[in-house]
Image (tube, rainbow, N blue to C red; front, side, top):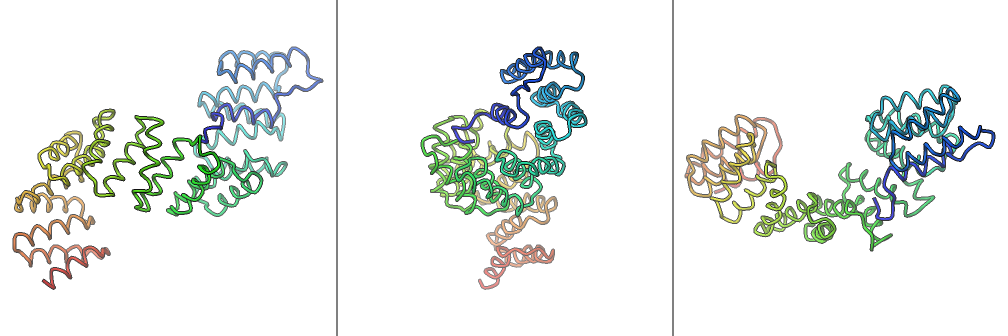
Length: 385
């Protein structure tokens, strides 16, 4: 993900050469050797069908040739035909047990189809013979992260950093690992190491990841510059636009968030989440008419509870408490565990001078046995008034 890294296919191909060697055996017949070299070169150039033809010619000359079987597996894998690729890699391993690149390709296929336990089992076979291979270690760490084994994943990423202290894959993996477990400060620590290691060439995904950590930590003003830097690299990047808008929302500068919500809608006009967020921003600036337009656009696509809530809150904001009560009561029937609905409904009753109805509303939520400090605090506030 770092700007200096090769794209994933090129990276995997170069590593493949390390593992099973497209370097040719000196005892290999020259015709097979040339076809093998040509096949791998064609594969690297993404001329997949030509590569397949070369590898199949090898099999006509030598049944079960390991280079050809691995090459055919690679060809299928590059086309995301993982079932077919698994067949070629498995056949290679049945004829040539321990072929490292067949193991590597097979594990990558299982990872791609989310069979992480199988992928781990195969990669660990490789590590028995080479426990310092950084590429495989990071692959295994990634797989453990996918199955939410925090301890094993972190241990392997840290092993990689012991060997190569600024390894991009390990730093990024550790960032994602901690982020997935809601340890945002630790995630930020590892992603910032990526920035420190190469400040002039920061991958846009690292920038948005750092920004997202600050969003989660509610340090919106610190996250904003990273999203802005990401947007300067890609003016249409969804995550950068969303991050900037949400940071302005978190900084209570709704009027500034509107510009960025609308930029997303220019590209994706039927995005219900963004329509609702934009409606919220207009509502919070007091522009109820425009807010209602956005909420209704979202509702026209499909029912959305947040858009429906927004419309109810517009009624409340305009002093139409009876209509707001009707809307909120209807929403509660469909979402009885949403504490926010009860608070807004109770507030409407309070504004109507119906203190008992307000308390009854909050008590009905408390009777569900769901803990909400906000509900408890509001009930106490009403009782004390």
